[in-house]
Image 1 (cartoon, helix red, strand yellow):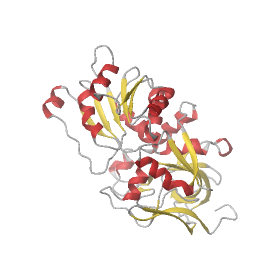
Image 2: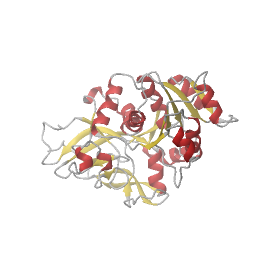
Image 3: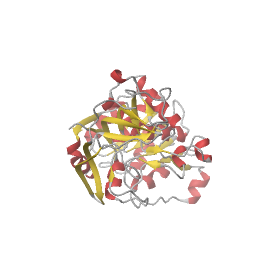
Image 4: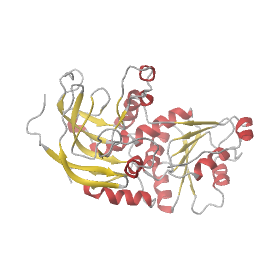
Length: 357
């Protein structure tokens, strides 16, 4: 079943080899029996998309592959096994990093679909959302708001940036009234992390570089800002910001795409605190003093995207009007410029591609 007059080809940003992404015409894909075809209205741009383009992760990537994994749009065609009780033509949906999983292994059964050994990843192992039309598993697309009520551009970043930081906050175990440091707070993930943290009743200490990012973080609700570009000691400044006793924050979310902050976090987190690793700088290593980590009972853990349940919860925050992350809409032809700004650490908030331009 499909909507009428679907085009045969479309514009897409295709990774053709490491470091090269090209805007070109490609065929519109057809959904398999268990998939839906989604008209992508907007697609957020994530730092993961830059890693995918550069090929600097130790994870095999399909080549060529259409990039992108934060696509918000409407269902325009369905596979033969997708009935109306599941999804209908015109439903508003989102395509995430986790494009599909087997739903049968022990990880999927307990709700850890992102750990599925047969998971497919949008914009990495299967074609993603930097195109006008994209396919995804019907059971894994995010259910958004009703079609004409959906702000697709604002919702697109929630599908990865929002979901990822919301999951990280859950994994940290931090509770309302406690403190969380968000490292990389002025960037795409960080700007949304501040929003989720504030909505969860947390006291946010933002860490990033530059006055512009500091101003943005405070407008979003950060209680204090540590500028690593001017700070003589980020560790001491974070401890000072944590209160009179200088015990340090209860948790740290590491979102910055560089190795240095990973080493600092275990120094300033409070005893019995938790450091959550989310960003994945290429080739980075994590080192920490074993004695200090043990006697202070510090927990260090990774957090990787989220489940279907996490997705529904993350979207619900948006639905309730609690998430208003800053974003800028640009045409799909401007993607390379967005990547250049990312590499120069000049991105404040999130860029969102209008796939029609």
